[in-house]
Length: 302
Ligand code: NAP
Image (cartoon, rainbow, N blue to C red; front, side, top):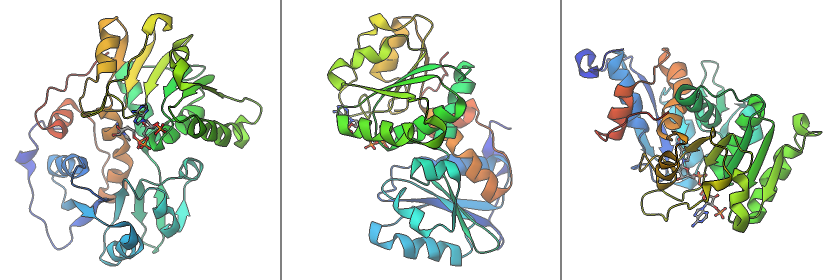
């Protein structure tokens, strides 16, 4: 792929393929920039738009986009759960996560919902660290919406143990109960919940440490951890990508751990939608990372 997408810039025709991201608010979304980069890089006759939709208007907007000939849409906060009611088919992974982030409007009129967040998370780690997930021991901080998708993906990838902690214990317990009770983990009890005030225990015997809380995000306090129990060959990743190197990643790097930043998760989760709507497998490159960050240094770690 070229590093200069402008070279293949194309004007829209009457047949342009259309997609977008539905959110509320949506002005913070990096998805229009990301898909816009690929559309220009590949010279595709198409457009991807930010679509600000208030919760009460969600059904009208989804049906309206379909009626207007859109190929589909991404769905972001706060609509990921509510949009499931407007899907005709939901893939099994999204069913288990309980949230949809990608809609495809099929030619037969059916609306298909999937969830690519967990796939994006795994692909980012595969590209950034060459980790083999099978048998991996994982520590997870946070039990919000993003954690749910990541935990389901980790289960599918064959990890052997997940230690989970969250400030609000009931949320972690609910998540562990939902996933431990799923059919494929019935005998395993894969997820163990640790109290937040003992969160450093998550690092014991851990091969992969993941922050899924919003701690460390711009405007939020940092996530402070005592790394002394973390094995020296562990990988540390943070799904917060603003800033790209969070205080957690900076501290882990300082102590010699391999780190993977969270931007790639955003980029990789976008690939299945782009392929479905615009008919081309997109690539995640350094030039894309730089473009999405808007010029911020985007060197990969690990
Ligand atoms: P969410 O559902 O609102 O969950 C927020 C999580 O952060 C919860 O576990 C919450 O704990 C915890 N938290 C918030 N403030 C805290 C504090 N002061 N102390 C301790 N824990 C705190 O949000 P989400 O959708 O899961 O997103 C979480 C973060 O991931 C956000 O920063 C988001 O931008 C980022 N993200 C990145 C990607 C990516 O592609 N890289 C994708 C999705 C999300 P409680 O349950 O106790 O409130």
